[in-house]
Each structure stands twice: as structure tokens, then as C-alpha cells.
Length: 405
Ligand code: HEC
Ligand code: HEC
Image (tube, rainbow, N blue to C red; front, side, top):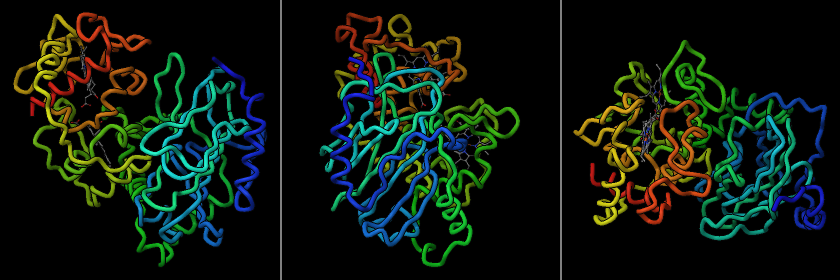
């Protein structure tokens, strides 16, 4: 059911007044005059007593701060409050169901109305979702999220959206905008001045962002809707790298330790990386509200792997037309020169990304030749295996991929 956001959230807004108390500002009303011309969201971080504050730009409506670490070089480790502010920009009117996952407390307002509020987010990775869909208009829709870290454990937050025809995904960075503020300007100036106390506090999110912006990565790589700044580059888009790639793979890639490149047909690549690749990888994950990836120890289920082996054949789902299987070459489908050898997939990809990408490859990698095999209801055209349920078929393929190492 689609509900309009104006009506049902009045009481939630009053409750919000009650718990937020003195330390936080109320959701900012939509401000037509505000100049939301920067990408990402403005993020203000503060200590619980408000004595220390800092501001920077966040690419996504997400964060991850491991227990005992700090969210900002200008805050001590420990409890903090984070306020993300800006707007979601849309080309057309549309409705979305928003979900929040994480630890700690959260209050999400859209268009000036509180749509999600909880003192303690559900444990595990259970989502807290809006009551029905929230209507957004063409153009800029103000958004504000106030987050407070939990009293113990890692502090993390991920906000996703989706609707009947858009599988749930993180709010895409290319749709997020913010207006520059004096607080952000001060944050930039303090970083440029590299205040001594802050030098000892490394925040992986900021470390990754600094390297990517300063070492020419964006000359070859497009990201967050911005094209690569250099001359035509076929390098993969980096928007979802933090969701997509395993930490160990990113480290091996940046430190030039890969046994095999995924796209050997492409010439260029990053030149010798002089930084800390582990920290950069962790920072990319943290930007998306994810922990660095644990080692891939999923045991391979041989029965499922055999089903997967059958599914990828030419006359079945046909993945083998484009993808090589280890030493077995691809059968030569259109796009096979750009498809990645299946042997590398389990070394590279995080499992949730694998499922997400297969649902709608075009949405995640615009222009890719990787076809979509799943219909809107989550079925493939092969009804004789698991009644056509795509998630179960892809799980079998995942197990098969584990046999190619
Ligand atoms: C000269 C162009 C160039 C520069 C500069 C460059 N890259 Fe790349 N990058 C590439 C190419 C080409 C690939 C594809 C390599 C392959 O798959 O074999 C790639 C792949 C990657 C990947 C894997 C993405 C995926 O989805 O498979 C990551 C991560 C990455 N680069 C990060 C970086 C970072 C971080 C920097 C800056 C320190 C950087 N790159 C600088 C060209 C470049
Ligand atoms: C028409 C050719 C084609 C077919 C058929 C095809 N793919 Fe792909 N696939 C591609 C291309 C091209 C890419 C993009 C590689 C890139 O990121 O540059 C890709 C990427 C992928 C990736 C991401 C790999 C990585 O490491 O980044 C996965 C996973 C994948 N395909 C799985 C499948 C599965 C499973 C099937 C069968 C159900 C399939 N593909 C069928 C062309 C194809």
C-alpha cells in the first residue's frame, strides 16, 4: 500500500521531540532557497555532551565505527551522535519504502516528517522500515537522520530503499545532495591544518576518501554519478566498491599481489599504491556501513554445487556463454570479452553483493552487458529448478563457484 507522508507521522514527530531533548536540533523544514549543489550529505558529529563537534561530507547515508575507535579525528573514541542532512534528488515523483539497519538509536525525517524512529535498532541485521511507502517528489526532498551510537559494541548504520519494482538497495550516492555550511567549511579547514591531536586518530572512512581523491583514482574511475575525469577510461565504476569487493581482494589488488586480473583486456590500472591498502579497504566498507569482510569460509555444499554447475550451462541459464570457468574458456556470447572468469568471483565478491547484483545488473553497473535473469517477482525462466526461485538458484551457483578455486 502506498501512503502519503504528510498524514500518518504526526504522532511520531511529537515522540521525536520528547526523546531528542536538548542536544539535537529538530528536523530542518524544507528550505527552497538552500543550495543543495554538492554531492553526498552533510554529516555533523558530536560528543554526547556537545563539547566536541566536527563536520564532514558523507557519501552515503551509512557509517561504521568499530567499538573503541572514533567517528572523527576531532572526537574522542566512545559514544557520539551523528546528524546527516541534505536532500534526495529524483528525476520523477516516486514512492519508496525506507529501511534502517544498525545499532544504537535513529530518527529519520523526510520532507520534514519523521518516518522512522527507534531508541534501539533491532538486534542482528533486522531492518526497521517505514510504515508503507513514502512519497517523494521530483527534484529535491529534504532528508535528515539523527543517529546515536549504542552504549557498547560497534556503531553502525545503513539506510536502504526499494519499492515494487526496485529491489532494496542502499540510497544511491548519486541521488544525495547537500548544501555547503560553515560547519563543513570549518571541518575542511581543520583537516587542512591537521591539528596535532587529530593526527593520532585515524578514521578509515576519511583515510579512504582522502586517498581516492588525492591519488588520481578518479581520473580513471567514475563514481557516485560523476564520470572519470581523465580521457575515456574503461575502468570499472567505483560507486559500490565498498559493498561489492572483499577487503582481502582490495588489498591484494592495490598492493599488486593478484595472481590474475579480472579484466586482463584492460590496459591501465592504479600505479603502485603507496598507502595502507588495508585501511583503505576498511574505509570503503565503513562508508557503506559495513565491517571489513571476514575470510570466506563458507563450506561448499557439493549437492548445491552440482545443481549450480548444471544451471550455468549454455542451454540452461547460459552464464558459460560469457563467463570462463577457470581454465575452460567462455563459449563466446556477446559480452564475453568483458565478463569476469567465474574462478575469481568468490575471491572478489561479498556474498550480499552477488545476490543484489544478479537481481538487476543494469541498475548497479549501468551499461554492463551482464543480462538480467530475474523478473520483478524474483523468478528466472527456468522453472524446473527450485520452482524458478532466483535466490535459491543463485545460491547453488555460488556454491558451484566455490569449487573453481
Ligand atoms: C590508470 C587508470 C587507473 C587509475 C589511476 C586507478 N585505477 Fe583502479 N582500476 C583501473 C582498471 C583498468 C581496473 C580494472 C582492472 C581489472 O579488473 O583487471 C581497475 C580496478 C580497480 C578496482 C576493482 C574494481 C572492480 O569492481 O573490480 C578497484 C577497487 C580500484 N581499481 C581502485 C582504485 C584506487 C583506489 C585507485 C587510486 C589509488 C585506482 N583504482 C586508480 C584503472 C585505474
Ligand atoms: C551476455 C554475457 C553474459 C552472460 C550470459 C552472463 N554474464 Fe555475468 N557478466 C557479464 C559481464 C559483461 C559482466 C561485467 C563485468 C564487469 O564488472 O566489468 C558480468 C559480471 C558478472 C558478475 C560480477 C563478477 C565480478 O567478479 O565482478 C557475476 C557474479 C556474474 N556476472 C554472474 C553471472 C551469472 C550467474 C550468469 C548466469 C546466470 C551470468 N553472469 C551470465 C556478462 C555476462
